Length: 501
Image 1: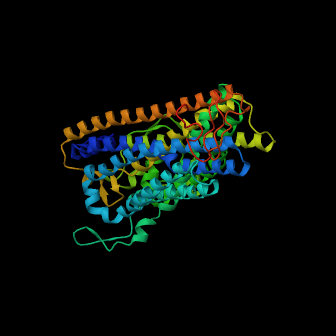
Image 2: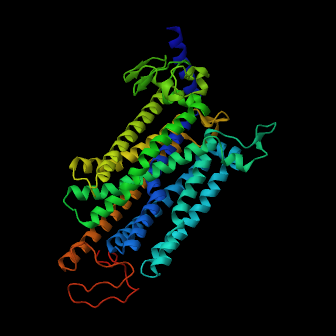
Image 3: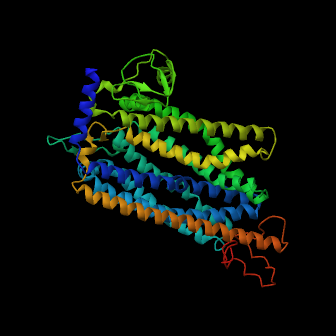
């Protein structure tokens, strides 16, 4: 009883010592990061998916595949434009909300942001060239100019993950007598112990999420009776990519969890709500940790946590009480991290099962599954993947609390001195701007979809072919039903982009 009272007193003391501006600063940063990360999978992986479809269209001389690639490239450009805005807001927030972090450590972990800046510049130029090249460049030349796009997207992710992994396992510097970092080693600052596990897990998550999101659009179309070549191809290419990566991503997720166990044992304790250091530690699926160390709810599986951590029930798992209360997540934060981690693992497992279901159909020689429940699952997989990405971010960031630079600087030490009232007002304005921004983004996508459907219906009425599209991005436009003249070859708008569609 005395132990419980003391814990509550310590928690109250920690809360009272926190600056008033800490809560609005954290809430604002969390909101903008959670909003931005919705766009990240498409920004990182959609260029690769588009180029795979582009290559298929060129290799098989398939005008439908080329049209899909053309349309996806338009979506890619719109998404990139919105990502510029949300990414710029985050850049300003690092300086405005966390001056202690940037002022002290900017010379070390800012290297990653510099890499991301160069990647962003290159990607914007390449996207412009790729969009301009439809119907204006030779097919082979146009495709080859698009090939660097996935690499620049991955380079941008490289920079961001280098910065984040450094915040989790900082190295590559020494501290002078005033506690300031000096003698920065660039390579060590970039390639930290957590960089490899974080980066490859992140890349896998982006491929899986983008693949399922894009395929989900066409899965919904299949459920509504649109089962032509256009929808089959639009579903098959991105879903196959996501299905292939899903089992790999599951292994990468297990690998990064084990890396956290070795490199950030207190964060691992929060992920698994382990209170006391011990062996034969049970695994809790969900459940809630209380300030006195007790756990309520959830499903308890004896010894499983030790087995998962070190392949043996005798594996010692560090508990939260191994460090002072001021150096670890509190009970509420640990519960949030635990639920986010478990939800991410559950979603990942379900996605693997969906991928295996798809693989079973393909191995039996079927081109496409015929079960409606499969397509219902595929339609939900995109949303579930985005939820899993959000959970991964929550696990990474909340699990590191109270450190903004692990074991070197606390979040409270880095926060701005701006009054909390001003930060709450700023938070409200950002919410309004983001609602308008994402509303405009969805409106543009819906208008593009409507125009494309009208174009498909118009061509179908003209009895040009049985497929929804006949024109290729590199050829002349077909004669419209009203008898209009053909557009000159190599000029004029691309199919589906002529104002009617």
